[in-house]
Amino acid sequence: MNPNTRRTLGRIAAAVAVLFGLVTLVAGGRVLLGADPGYRVFMPLLVFNTAMGLAYVAVGVLAWRRHRLAVPGAAAIALANLAMLAFIGFVYQPDGPVARQSLGAMSFRTAVWVLLLLVFRWTRNGSGGASAPRS
Image (cartoon, rainbow, N blue to C red; front, side, top):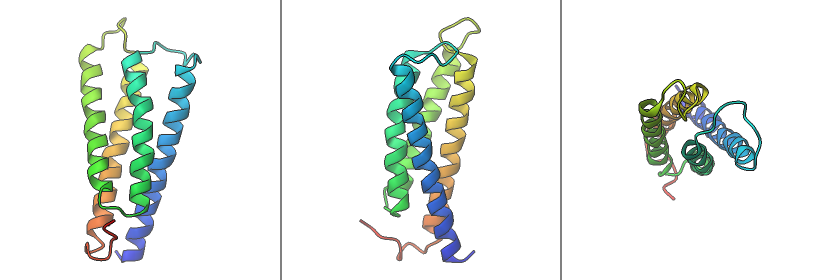
């Protein structure tokens, strides 16, 4: 695949990361301010996800700029999401504090960030390394 196509794919993935972060911030912020999501809210998960929205935006911006920290940042997000998914999976009980919807949403977030990590890594490595800005 030619370098321009890789760069375009990297830009699309970066935009997805930023938009995903903004949606996460808005959704989490609304619930933190009192909106009812329609299911049980596990406060540690809500706070985690809302804070991660900031990280999603930051890493998306880094990826857009082809910064060298975009890939490690995406890896950290994917691992943090995986750790939270494992935690809520461990504490989940049908009538417990974690809603089934939260397990599904956290699974989705984790999958999205694993995919974004792979795309960021592939688009960075595909550039030959030397042409990507190092700032």
